[in-house]
Length: 96
Image 1 (tube, one colour):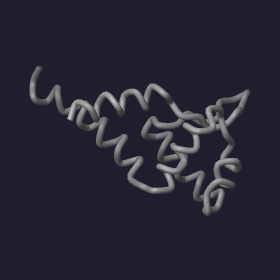
Image 2 (cartoon, one colour):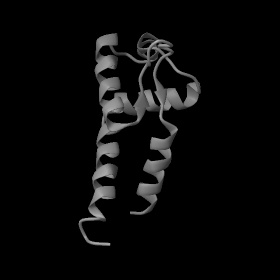
Image 3 (cartoon, rainbow, N blue to C red):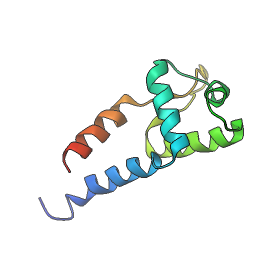
């Protein structure tokens, strides 16, 4: 494997870590882990001392990084943690 080939996992770990770098986003991830079911933005906002619009922006960052999957039409069940991202993060962090 070339040096460049090993850089892709480094970039992915950095992206996942950067998304968790904000305490509110880390709290959202922890809440979603503990809840074990999809939650709406308003349900998540009720757990934090933040406005729903702020929580929505944090969810957008977490979704972009791959931590969270958003509501999908037509079910629109809510936001849920992507357990594959959790496993990937653990695998990449252990490889440090």
